[in-house]
Length: 269
Ligand SMILES: Nc1ncnc2c1ncn2[C@@H]1O[C@H](COP(=O)(O)OP(=O)(O)OP(=O)(O)O)[C@@H](O)[C@H]1O
Image (cartoon, rainbow, N blue to C red; front, side):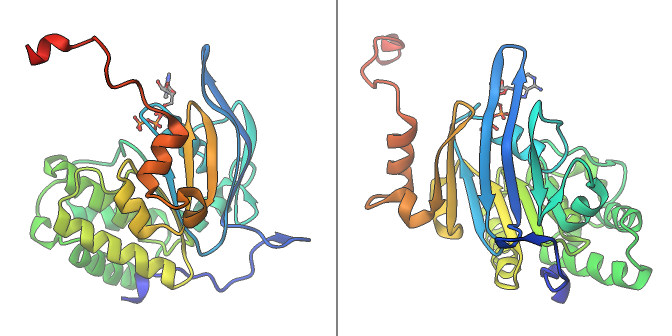
């Protein structure tokens, strides 16, 4: 299936240091009232990498990814996709990336096929190409059986899958996926993983957030660990996890509450 591959052949902006990375975050900062959700985060996602962002609940993953893709305006800092500034040139930047945001809002009173057709037409994809890509994506996502079902009646996992299909439709070079495997059954997850692995093998770049360390360890070559709005580690998977597992490194980096606390002792009585 040629269409779910990256089209990384055109020249994209670079600089003195060579081609620009797939994603570069410079000093991204966001506070909600007194709560600093993301604290001056700098991050580079190299081209062709499969990048995993992990961190405990409330660490700032969704906030940083939302700013990175132009869905949430930062208080400070900038985000560049292949050297294109997401806020000053949003049309170019958004043509280069496919995004699966957290809590994706979609036109819900459409079938999966209608939704993909609608998004494809907004993207200006030619009718024949769109029809072929829609057919293949519904097939690969195993949503063919649900072709006549409205998205509003989809399960959570099915919504993730149709969301990923909309992100892939225009053949982006970078995919930014917030918790793509949440609520997806193991069979569908295997299909999604295969699509993403193939996308990276063809030159695409993926950034995903997840709470599932085993999945990040299995898929990603580069990881970043976030806690309390800051990056506490970032680099090649083997460097970040050291001699142990990613989960052990995560616990070491993020810290855990003491396990012998008095609270909830009544549960065992
Ligand atoms: N729209 C908002 N208004 C106010 N506070 C917010 C908003 N969005 C996020 N926050 C706060 O910012 C912090 C970071 O939240 P964020 O959703 O980015 O974390 P996360 O790492 O994605 O968490 P999770 O793993 O639970 O999804 C949290 O303290 C959260 O309460």
